[in-house]
Length: 152
Image (cartoon, rainbow, N blue to C red; front, side, top):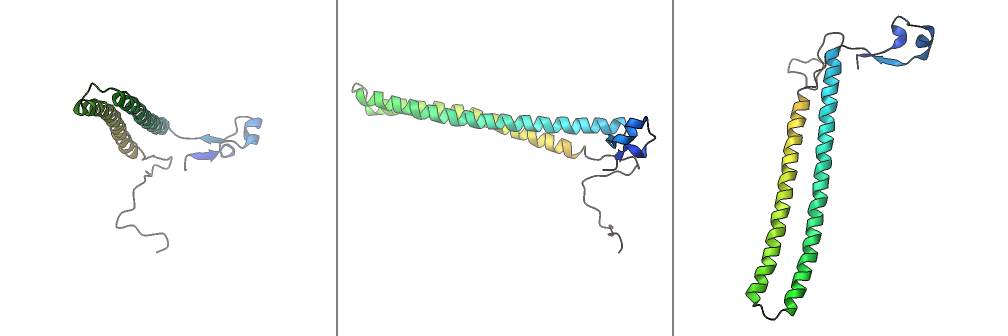
């Protein structure tokens, strides 16, 4: 990266500074701002991905609780002889419909988070043009049709 230079290329501030050989970031405020924005976008994407993983766990948990709920319900209905078969099936169907609704809500939340990630990805892709100290803009786009490799 063009904006990293060794501190011995700069005028020494003191004897100990020039002997360390550490690296300094040389750039302007806009480069720092750009780096901050990109880092913030990256962190937001990571948070959203973590939220999706937690929602996946919530779906799994709801499915497991549904299985326990259905087992208990079927065990209870098997012993209850006062209800008709249609009433028993309706109770089981209601439990299934409720679980399906709960899972659909969680899946909608996951889809919303995926859309937010797509927006942040698109936004971060537009912020990668970094002007180095030479004034040339570096970006991640492919060279145009008139590009000639060096030496040809």
